[in-house]
Image (cartoon, helix red, strand yellow):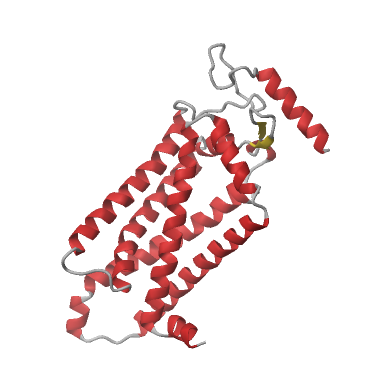
Length: 269
């Protein structure tokens, strides 16, 4: 109880809680990007990966609830610190010294709110799958005959919508900026930021966040302009055209894939 009191009642404890929860969420967004990068490989790659994640069952929901709880704690503590900062009475010279930090924190709050809204929509779109019709959530079959959700096509279809693509880029851009400031603040809150390597830390953080943004932007651009494998390759989706020189299907023709999908649907019904 004493530990909880320190973490959630004291100002230092709240900053530490912000730092730890932020680090956990940072690890998640990096792993999330590494999974989405598979959009450039054969569709079976990301579809098999997504199927494996879903096959975790209760463990997956445990991870999701843990991440959701971490996000809620992060947002709640941020709101508490914001209220405390507004109530705090500072002297004139303190206002001048902390003006830059106050402006940065203010933009952190704005970007944090927008990113939070984006996360909710992103979950409804790709996890809960309720933002679009059934045609936006197709199924397919892997090379070994396993019926799975066609996550590859879900991503491509989603980012071919210009509104979703722009909103995603805006949100990821704000998230990248949020991380650039938040990661440095995290080290400072944990007492790991020193003068000797402060500038180096800031530069590394900026590089990491820029690469994170570019990685996500590349996925969006590839899906929107249909670069390489980042295009619709499921014969069940309207507008699909299987080329005679296509290396995606290999020995599996479009008709064979369609028949396999129909067969799996009939067996499930």
